[in-house]
Length: 439
Ligand SMILES: Nc1nc2c(c(=O)[nH]1)N(C=O)[C@@H](CNc1ccc(C(=O)N[C@@H](CCC(=O)O)C(=O)O)cc1)CN2
Ligand SMILES: Nc1nc2c(ncn2[C@@H]2O[C@H](COP(=O)(O)OP(=O)(O)OP(=O)(O)O)[C@@H](O)[C@H]2O)c(=O)[nH]1
Ligand SMILES: [Mg+2]
Image 1 (spheres, rainbow, N blue to C red):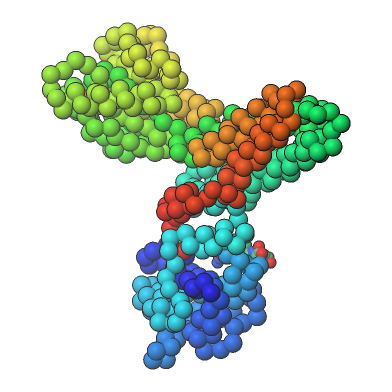
Image 2 (cartoon, rainbow, N blue to C red; image 1 turned 135 degrees about the horizontal axis):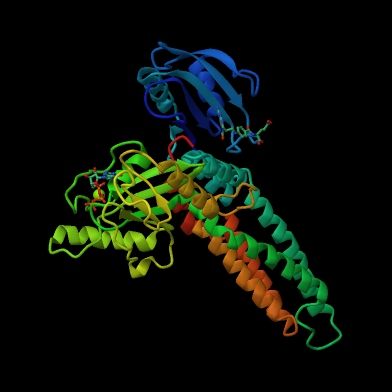
């Protein structure tokens, strides 16, 4: 018998209400022991006095739920205690639960791990749920919620069914063919495999959008020293995140600020001004700035309109999306050719810059139509593996049936890895490590 586990599922610290969840065979006993009564009717919120079974002292008056398995999130019997959210009440109830035999505190993610083990969720739903809990913007929430509700899982099972049918056709051909060496794939199997491959190719192609939505679009603010890069960052952030001074070479470390631009998370990075210098600390800052530039999705090159110099793009920036921003428009020459003219101190033009960044971020990561299904490298790579197998199966169309069949089988295995049906041992710990306690 699996142990019964419990945890505070709402956030740590003082709150109006806190939710404590219990999952496992002893959930009923735990609820009955603390409330001193039989469990309330199933799935019906009921008010109960909870007492410490050790000394009978009342701990709280709570709203409780009795949720008998297997129709629960974990697939096991569950109880929920909605208590007043003070340290003393939560601590008292958790301590009381801990004294009961066969009960222990849940590990991070253990409720979800049990849901996965009991077939209530597949691995992509687990990943979606982890992202839903971490979601900070509306776009992240939409993507994660769709995944947690099985949008990717449903597509996978549909691809799987079609590939299993194609495989059956291939195997029938091997078994019943009059010829000694039948054609690799008959027309029907070939068109089925090609159809699935086409759909997977589209999902793989949209993969970077989901990854950017999940991880944030990276924007690097670059340029010569003293042009107002840190001032721009502070304006966009709406707070004094980076030190500003009239001394060239003020910024050395990268200063990051995350913004929510139209639902897309955007990570802005202020960097050290690029120039030749003998100062070893500043040199290190400049080398970090260059590294960040090449890792960014969007590069903003800032020039000082009071002393405009032609923007010199560092070599490694050539691939990034980029915009030249002329700063100090309040005192400088606004006829200088650049993408946008702004003033970080007066604020003029800043709305245009923000709109430019929001549009670019939407373009890179947004998916208003909900067509983006994958959000992690792991998911994209599993689909890419599957696709490679299906492509090879198609190449065998006029070759050997046994080889084509084997490739389809390998493609199915890659889908199995994606949903956590096979080869999960290595990835489970990685995925659940980042979960919070109580989920
Ligand atoms: N208090 C509380 N709030 C919560 C949860 C929870 O467990 N407890 N959830 C936890 O994730 C989420 C809600 N999601 C849930 C999804 C399914 C079931 C559930 O019991 N499903 C059963 C029966 C469905 C039914 O009969 O209506 C099932 O799917 O078999 C519960 C919550 C968010 N809010
Ligand atoms: N007039 C005017 N001054 C500005 C504007 N933006 C920044 N400054 C001033 O320019 C100087 C440099 O600003 P910073 O934001 O520190 O410049 P930086 O590009 O981060 O400089 P480094 O970190 O040294 O590379 C400061 O004195 C700012 O007050 C602007 O739009 N107009
Ligand atoms: Mg600076």
